[in-house]
Image 1 (spheres, rainbow, N blue to C red):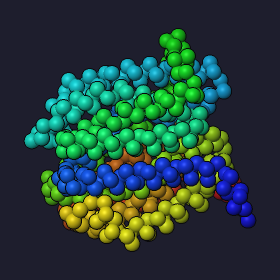
Image 2: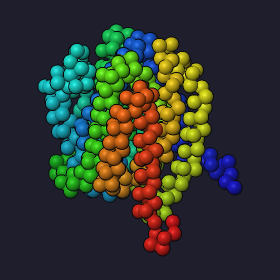
Image 3: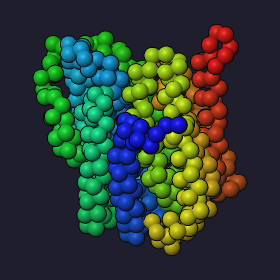
Image 4: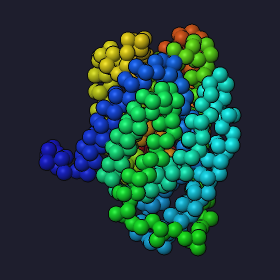
Length: 430
């Protein structure tokens, strides 16, 4: 039997403990921000905030060119080779700086078009798009530096950055919502991630002087070629995915109204809060381990570690959340949001399958399995969109979370079959 001392001294326990503190802080901040939005903006405001978050997620993927996981991978693989590391850092920095400026100009020049697509022609939030355009280059540089830290295995620094980012986000959101109402909430989403660059640079500066690693002479097109597969994968999951959610929410608004869309956005907000622990832990701990796993057995060991520790813990927490759903809704929001209680069952079922499949999905990025990822992700998004359209007509707003559960159950089954086949030895024994 493994001793308690051995568990406590393990790297997973230490990272998990610090990550738990980070998640607790983010949860507390999420509770406060949810309450503020519910009180000052109501369900319709919650829907617009949801649209802005989906749009920002898509823009995030486009402006970073989907390089984030690739930066982690090639930094981890070349951190002992200074010459190759300079090529990786120089090439990615120059490429991201140039592309982020171009995308920022596209947002700025066509701000009215983007406003109409995200918020509807009846709303005028062009200035929010302008703020987003200005902040994009700073946000991209923040992602760049954070990914390098992650690649070097500096898990603690990445988590500290996340903690300070959450605090900064809350302060900025409260001030802007207090002063500008819905517009303030939208501006905070656009501007806050860029402000985090100050915190990231502070932690990054103790690792290296990034300017020593950036040179036009070190620019290497082979690095871009290697990163292209990550761009394709991120484009499907990080760009098309949020746009699908945006389309679903706009469909809900068209058929059921902004209030119903706000209830679903509230449920999404709750879900994102308790899923933070899993997503952060996967990024800072399990992804680097999957990248360094060179054999099927090593990869399986990472999977087993996840399924023996993280998945059971999530199922336990999900059960508690379901039991306390009434209290959670009243605590996080206002009486206006009581209908959200009806959405918990299917949301939690879907999230359980989502958590089960996330470790498998990260293997696509770790091993650059581009085609397999794109095919499975497009199938998943197709199922989500079509099933939500179908279920909404029959079950109203509950149909959206039913589609969520159906989609992630199907996705987990699909990935399970795929990896079982792929990792099956020639002898037929797994």
